[in-house]
Length: 194
Image 1: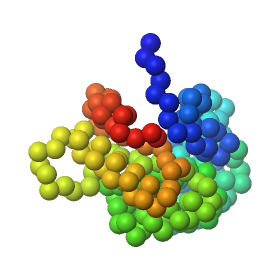
Image 2 (image 1 turned 45 degrees about the horizontal axis):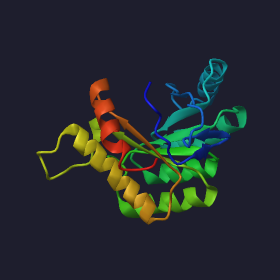
Image 3 (image 1 turned 90 degrees about the horizontal axis):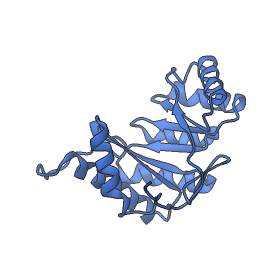
């Protein structure tokens, strides 16, 4: 059996992640987050099946506006998966979410990221650097592989967060296929403690 890499522990709501804590089960809703009743029902169903952390997409203001109502009705820590607009992350933080997922491929402006980091730091809310191979930042170097570009995107975002004195970080790398995802994780594992 492979020995598990020990990472910096963080807390998402009342669930500890990293640092040797047990692996937590996380899932994502597939409802429209703006549909509070359906989203809450799906989260409760996930809870019943052992889910310990849930992530919901926040692609627009309607979804962000629904977060306070959702939070009041669930006990599972809620992560807001932010799409393109840093203001949605700020609204999600005000709504009381337990974590954020930011994709460096679609929220990359350092000033916007800094605003989100300040608000997250104030509330002690972790940020998941969620790299997706289908939405990588543009690069001038055409010789880089998908894995290299994924690692580069993640490390760039991590550096930005660390430069802002923020270390409540989780990292996720996702590719279109399992072997590429595994290769990306192997490539980045020794480069950062998250």
